[in-house]
Image (cartoon, rainbow, N blue to C red):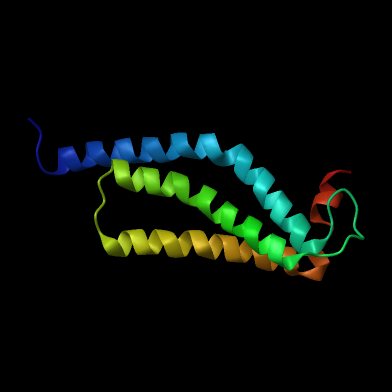
Length: 119
């Protein structure tokens, strides 16, 4: 029976695998939610000219944060990480990513980001 570093390494590997699998599951919905949040903040979807709706953008950003947290939480749970500092760091990382996306979406120069991707 393995003890010590070998057992910890196996748990870490399973945690990483769980995080990657959960990431594959949420990547498509996450991309849609991020684009909807951007559209709500900027007023641009297929073309620009709509009215920005920051409250809706904030709500979609919260949904985005939850979707971002799923792979992180599943990986930490499978790896049996019990450190509150690591979990708090994960929460701050997820909220930081969501806040950075909101800041990107609110910047006037980035308003037509998805319109430019469409060609």
